[in-house]
Length: 168
Image (cartoon, rainbow, N blue to C red; front, side):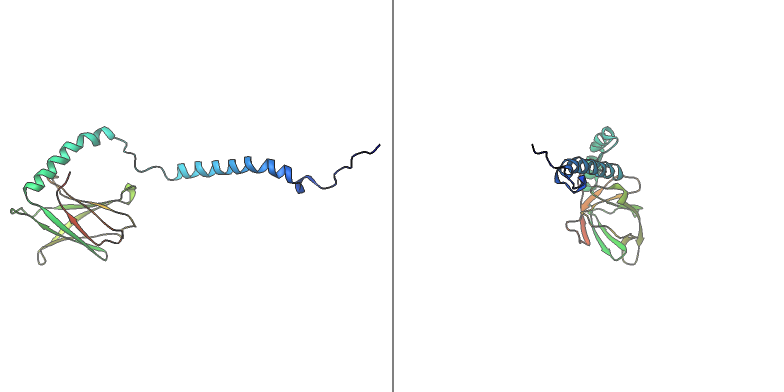
């Protein structure tokens, strides 16, 4: 009668224990990675007060119609760390304090709101701007009282000139 030989190779040098241990270990590691990624950078696309956003659509349409009735249009140029804005209209409008807003398409922490100053010599508005990251930025221009609004967007990642017009 022959007795089976005992295996003298330690368990960690065998194929089957590693074959059984590896998939659950990889699953646990991927789960930890996904939970870390989900909690580290929450979704910036979700609007917390969506009903207020919905009610604001009608006001946005009225502001765009008012800007259209004034014949407002603007050209924005970014030169280094300065933004230049040329505002034109079909009717004379009083010089007023304007606000230019650069909005990141997905992350509101990168948005920049710039109060514009007026350069009487060049007849242009201007403001200093921080470096914009790589994105297709949306741009809004409105006066301090919020009576009208012009909108535009960067058409390319390295775009330095933006045309703005009334739109809801």
